[in-house]
Amino acid sequence: MTSAWETAALLPVRPPDELAHGDVVVTGQGTYWECGSADWHLMLGWFAGPATLRRWPDDREQSWTVIEEDAAGNRQVSQRLVTSAERADEDNEINQLLAERGIPARPGGFRWFQLVPPDKTGSDVVAAYMRVQRELHRCHDMELETAYARAAVEELYGLPVTPPPPIPASLRQPAPENPRHTARIQAEQVRQASLLPGAPGAVPILRCRDLRRSLAFYATLGFRGEELSGYAVLRHPTAELHLSETSNASPGGCLIRVPDAAALWHSLDGQPTLGPIEDDNPGMVTFTLLDPDHNQLLFVST
Image 1 (cartoon, rainbow, N blue to C red):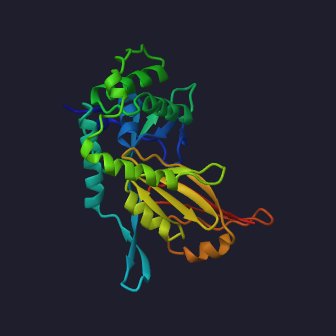
Image 2 (image 1 turned 45 degrees about the horizontal axis):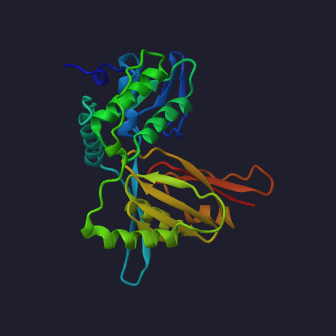
Image 3 (image 1 turned 30 degrees about the vertical axis):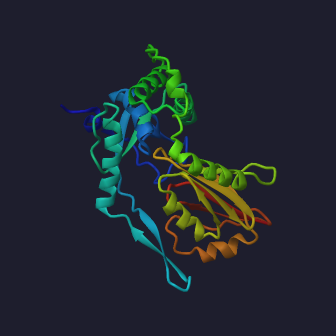
């Protein structure tokens, strides 16, 4: 049976290579947001119906940052192109997660886009996704996830809403502690208590799919820190940021103040996602760099 993925028409215009969280592509046929960055986004796109789906061949060149360190601690940073086999593996991983929710597999090699309702924005669609995630905090029941996602899409598109079943109290609570893990859990809590507090102020939390890969990338920028369970606290001489590992990594961003953005920019020459240096504003130098999960890092010095 042919699925809506296979019958989806092409997007009327070529989309930008990178779209930030909530950004949209405006076309003569409507406004579209990219729903192909994670299985949860794709689930929302699927439930909106076949008429809302569009696709575009993914011909972008992607690369990994490779860091090699010898016995003396000397590091060599290089870039390696993502192979077609690695792209296929990622597609298969997402398709497996969709299948667990009763959604057909997508054809490989495409970026996926969903029509935004006329009275909504890309941020409204993202907010609907985040609202469901909050409601389902600590709940890992596939049937409930599917029901709540479908209801969110129906509400977003002004369709008759099928009320999802209530979330059982047992699923809202953490699983009972395994006595054998008590010592390990306590040690982890002690580490968190020592790492997470700090000076007053806000700290950005960026999502990533592979924590170790992200740690290696941020090490090239001068960040050092410690890894918790699926989480990392990174510190730079002038900044702090945290990383959270998740399969639903949606791009975010942060501003990082540095003493000399121009010097840092020149040291990063060769990074494939390094943007041009900007000095249009008097007394200010900026540039943008995307991390492996397309989080946007804006470096600034004055």
